[in-house]
Image 1: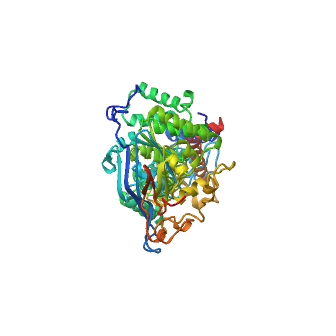
Image 2: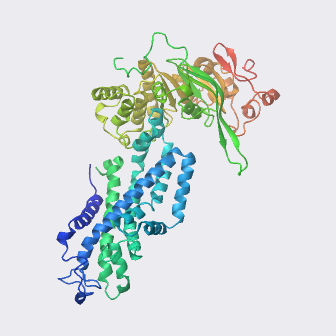
Image 3: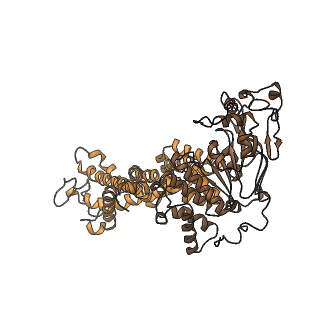
Amino acid sequence: MRWGSNTWVGGSLVAIAIGVAVFAPWIALTDPVMDANLMNAELPPSWEFPFGTDAQGRDIYSRICYGARISLTVGVVSQICNSLIGVTLGLTAGYWGGWWDDFVSGLTNLMLAIPSLVFALAIMAILGPGLVSLVIALGLTSWSYSCRIARAQVLSLKSQGYVQAARILGYGDLRIMFTQVLPNILGPLIVIATLGMGGAILAEAALSFLGLGIRPPFPSWGSMLSEARDQIRAAPWLSVFPGLAIFFTVLGLNLLGDGLRDILDPQSQTRRA
Amino acid sequence: MSDKLPKKLPEKLPEKLPEKLLELDDLAVHFHVGSALSGGVKTLKAVDGVSLDIKPGECLGLVGESGCGKSTLALSIMGLQPPTRGHIRLNGHELSARDRMETARTVQMVFQDPYASLNPRQTVRRTLADPLRLHGVTNKTEVEHRVMDMMDKVGLRRDRADRYPHEFSGGQRQRIGIARALILQPKLVICDEPVSALDVSIRAQIINLLLELKDEMGLAYILISHDLGVVEHVSDRVAVMYLGRIVEQGGWQEIFEDPRHPYTRALIAAIPDPFHRADAKVARAKAHGEIASALNPPPGCHFNPRCPMKADRCVSEVPALEAVADGHRAACHFRNTVA
């Protein structure tokens, strides 16, 4: 099995992000919350503060390190929830059809019609702010894309000879879905999931900005970005560095997703070999 | 054969062969198309009153134009398409009472398109071994032995077992498809246009392979094809279908040498004959026009709008499938007068 350059670059970026999150206490220069010092407020990047400081004089670099923990958790865990829900519903709806398909399609349309952020807001309002409720709120509200893609793919695969052959050989419905259908529709689903991770990181920013996500003073990339909004001209480093962190992480996830899709596809393996 | 499936499998080639392996009795499959909002619901009679039977070890050729219901009939026999009316009996058991697993070990199917009928994510080994495991062959060495044995039988090299379908050519893929159909040692194999997607140069190889396997494993075939050349070469008996009904059936010699239904004659006349070996009588029997829609079939004999011998009776009265000679039946009012 050969790994393409996508996988290496994407994997490295994601590994760095995860490394930063895990080792935040050791690589951060200062405490992200407690070391506020108004004397240092809004200093541009320097040797002492590599990414500058924010309005409270806290080190942006250290806050990004700690913020990685929240942003990555929210992005990855909520997207895994979304994919599990979406793929399960889409796969069964497409395969079984009938009233179940009507029900799932109706639900999907409902979810698509209401902006998922509004849904998430409602859930957050019920559960209250915090990391766990963030993951739940974002993990339950944007599965409609993967559901739609999964359903459409199943519909086109269902009449393929090998799915019929499996039924003729006596395979059960679940076995057919997991061994015959799912492996052949994974590619687009992985891409959707990795794209969604970036979306979830940004959605977390929006919720945090509204005061329903991570409460200040605790840092997350999204909330740092929203706090920096007003000073984008005066102190661009406030928004540039968290933005770059999000950019590289999402890029890494997308490249990794592409790479995984290629690795999982036996046809692309021999093409490269 | 030394390797047998577990006890659940009915014994292979018992002392007394059952008279009929498969029996179709007035089978009909109707679909409802359209909706009440868009011009009303119509009934599409894909299969309309087909009666057939297959004896063990026999090869029945099922012939007809595209859209005449051949493939629907096949799906129905496989239990994938519930019949609207009629009975399907396999080894004397009614379809509804049949266990799916039992059916899988008795009837299998070879598909038309070898590119779409193999899972691109499964190696040959997995494609062949999974069904065995599912049907209770758990011993690893036995599974391996049977997979390798089957690969030998269909002419695939053993060292190719861990390759994926896209690494094979069309003909080799069809061999994999045949291996998959035979791995459970069925008694009846439905071959749905098994060679029409293949290169002409490969067709003879696959047909010969099917014939060899038939003798070796005591198989019965239903060979669905619109290629009369293939059917003539392989079949013991031939059934001709037109718009969901069987219009003529009989031994291949009777069908090819003494066709009684004008549609059968038209089909035979349509076989390419570059050396002009056929006599002029058959060559004249061409059908004109297109096959009618199964949504709105013509009254009486379905073939009447295209028939060169159409009479008033053909429009008003549906001809029954009646005997011409022993085992040879045709559904034409003029079955005994045509010549």
